[in-house]
Amino acid sequence: MGLVPTMGALHEGHLALVREARRLASFVVVSIFVNPTQFGPNDDFARYPRDLDGDVSKLEAAGASAVFAPSAGAMYGPGEETRVRVGATAAPLCGLFRPGHFEGVATVVAKLFALVGPCVAVFGRKDYQQLAVIRRMAEDLFFPVVVVGHPIVREADGVAMSSRNAYLSPEERGRARVLVEALRAAGRAFEGGERNPAVLQAILRRVLGGEVIEYAEVLRPDLGPFEGAIGDRALLVLACRVGKARLLDNLVVGEEAVP
Image (tube, rainbow, N blue to C red):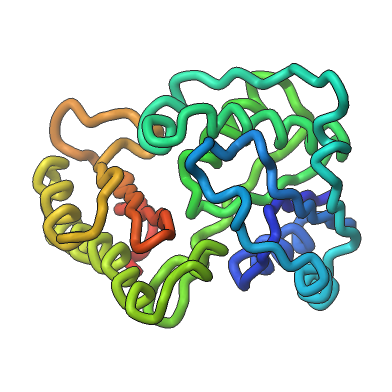
C-alpha cells in the first residue's frame, strides 16, 4: 500500500509523489483533506484553495488507485480531544511562527497512518521540517510505515511548486523567484568552498532583500545548529511572505544539486 497525504489543490509536485508511490507500491491511496487543526487563527484555512473534482481527475491520470476525501467531522468526531504532542524537532523554524501547527499535522497524519495500516507514505521535501516531524513520529510511535521524502519539484524558473502559489499576483510571482535565487547564491558559495554558516546565512538574507523573511537559516540536516564550520552537508532553509502567500524552500548543499 502506498499513501500520499495532501490538502488538495494538486499540482505537478503532488503528482510526482503519486508516481513515486506507484513505483513503490501496488495500490496507492491519496488523501485530500484540508486539516483544520494545523491552521492557526491568522492562517489561511478558509481561503485555502480547494478543487476536489479537478484533483480527482488529475489523480486518475497519474495512476492513483483511490482517493480518500473525508469531511472534518469524519476525522474529528464529536467529543474528540486527543492530539499527538510533538517535541524538539517541531520547535524551531515554522514551529516558532505557527504555534500548534505541527501538533495538528502529526495528529492528522497519525490518523491516516492508523486508517491505512502498513504502507509506504510519500511526502515532499519542500516541507522539510514537516517531513522530519513525521519521520520522528512514525519511529517514536512504532507505526508500520516507511516514510519517503521526495525531492522538490520546481517550475521552469526554479520556483518550488506550491498550492499557495495560486495566491500570487503576476508581480508577486516574479518576486517569488528570490527564494530560489537566494538558495542558488548560497549554494554556489558552498560549492566554492565557503563553510562558515554565518556567511551563508548572510548571503541568503542579502539576496532575499526586501521580502518579509520569517526565517533564513543554515542548519545541520537534522535541524540542529552548527557549532563551528560546516562539514560535508548543510541545510539552507527559508520561509518568506510574498504578498498573502507564505512560501517555503530549502536545499541540502553537499547532497542535492543547486537548482
